[in-house]
Length: 139
Image (cartoon, rainbow, N blue to C red; front, side):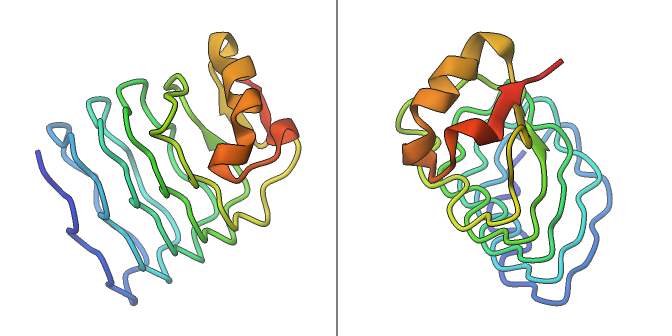
């Protein structure tokens, strides 16, 4: 269930195998994996993704973040190659801070979110260090 700190600092890690469906905690899991290019899946029951991809400078895309996610503070901080992400989870105040800090390749409509949470994401873009126009309704 707990993969916190699992691959943290593995600077040569490029790919990982499927993450077990039983995992609920991925906090700090890939922090500082600067060569990580892709992640095959994020299990539906994951709740904690705090600092999960922090500093993964080669990461361009990730699988959908499930609606079970309750904490993604600093999740994508410094992911300078990240071009898109889909969040199936609703916005939780105080739990998404700095999530997109220094994600310089994100652009208008590149972060898909649930339609019923779109306004909350846009209203709180500053806290996530994002631009309001980066958020769009997930179709």
